[in-house]
Image 1 (cartoon, one colour):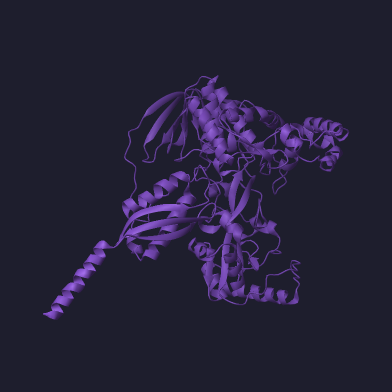
Image 2 (cartoon, one colour):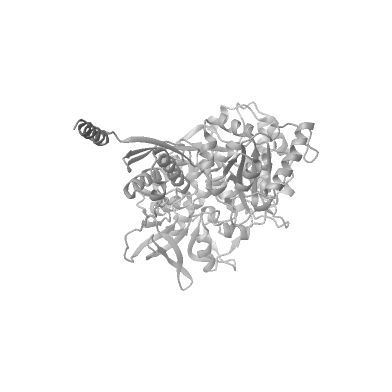
Length: 623
């Protein structure tokens, strides 16, 4: 009897303990666009009752939708296999990765929580809508076009394929041309830096000789004056734009950099800035580079101002609406066909014109690899730093109605980790590696040369599949963890970092030939012993690769911006293959060619993007 009472008491205590237990909270980390993202997961028994992002460094204007939607969807469906938030793929994946880590810590059934979730939108009916101007894309150029068209009295519908506004613009630094007397006056004189411009010859600048001659005259006057502060002018910016943008592809074909197109946009820099300021944007009292300034809150400050202007002008934006085809009547563009997330087709009639502002084709690896002619290693499998909606659809649609394409072979890349690991995250690896190799497991340069693995068009673009494999032993792991405690464990879960007890095992996990890497490392270790590298001249080393665990981090060139696209005139009208305008069709932003050249004109390009967006909207409205 006594034993039965004791047993009953134990059972009651256990039941009470279970019933009265507080829900437990677990944390997890993921690799986001800006670095580590952290979540807190509340678990009651085997049920996820709450999930929230507690810290992150994601891009404002991009991340908010994912941070709000992904955790609530995981909780609602009790599943980690949820769809990403359109336009914020990297942030979405980081939240799912962090939630997975928290799930493991909680001891929940990971297999059960990875059951597929069918997240389909409710079926919609096909609709037909009409506006004076239809704008395709709600990035910087598209929002500028929408605001401008509305300000010129047109009714406007904007079709955005993603769930958020901003396109590539919101992912940028927001830098644009700024010519501010107060800012310049606060800086030191730049006499020595200016003298080189006096040596340039007008005959070497072709049609760009006009701003060169004007800048030279301005510089001479400045050097002879006692003006306080540095000298700058739009003409000087145009000279720098030309010098940076001119070049050729691998076959010697010159890029196009039309003078009139660039002149009009750059000359309008002050007017564009005043327009954005009227929408609420503020410019920081400092310069980004020689000619570029940055809005307060960066690109978000710019996009917020554009949204304010577009809203005030009465523009209507439809999200998750992907344009598929331009509608033609008697040789004129009269509308757009589009599909929503259910695949239902919608028709949008344009009384006056259609503006294409769909961005670059940098997220279409097949298209980028097909056209590019700047490097040996780039291929269709390289990732992108831009939204998935930057897939070249605008170019395809316009080409189908006879639009002319130009400079499609020119683009630029950045470096990120494979499997979508953000470039900001992968950049932390630089300098910690003891050596790096290509996909053939052989070295291809002095590892202390950052230009081989970092920055625009780093040297790895000429390696097989434009990939780089950072290799090291416990010293590399310790160096990485010293930058951020425990970061290696987080990085391994992201799918671009591979750790093992032996070098051969780490090589195999990373997809390298284990024997070849071991041979390369053995040779490299002799160079460390000798303090000299006869292959590439390296003289400073981070030690031999000898003591496990071993780490191989895999990075790749990712398509950043494409510089080719549609041909427009200074009225933003699209030009056909015969050199004529296509009535009713306008374009602006990264979907056009001619305003960057062979290099990304950071600090200049957004001014041109917004200017031609503004022109396109006004011209379409006034047609």
